[in-house]
Length: 184
Image 1: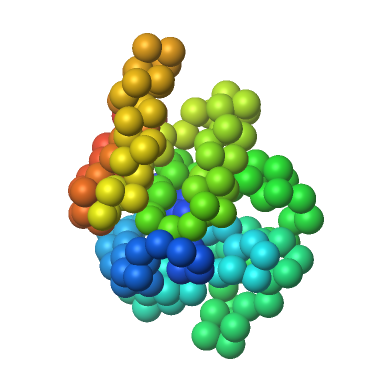
Image 2 (image 1 turned 90 degrees about the vertical axis):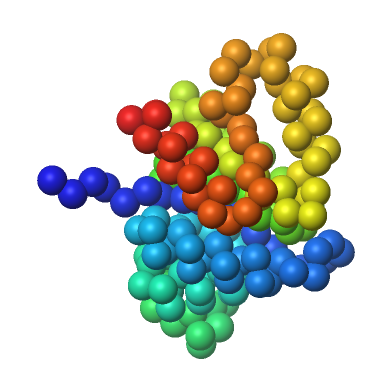
């Protein structure tokens, strides 16, 4: 009996201040996750689409779905990618939370980090409690790692099963696939 593909909501952006490697990280993650059989969901808002993530996953034979606001017009390179347009941010993030088995944060903009936490909050509100793995490349999520250790650990029993930090795309895959399996 074949197992159901893991559905990962991947939060990434290559716009704004931050790490110049973000596009290559998205490419690496899209290819790696797709080659390991994951289905990817991403959020596209305010004209920002994680194109390197989507194109890499598709070129590796992966399945991708975009949850978008009305500002998104897919470029020709993404023709055929399923896209749902939902007007309000809470609707979009709730839809992502409903579809995903786990959330993955790649180094990106404040907007992608905000969307990640919105989706995680939506999952908690629905009772689904989706695990989160953050790729801490170049210390992108050190502040969150400190927050998890100092604030989440005393107030959220089992926080280490809810939020984890990875040092590479491979490590992120290993963590997210293990956390998602533990939920089932």
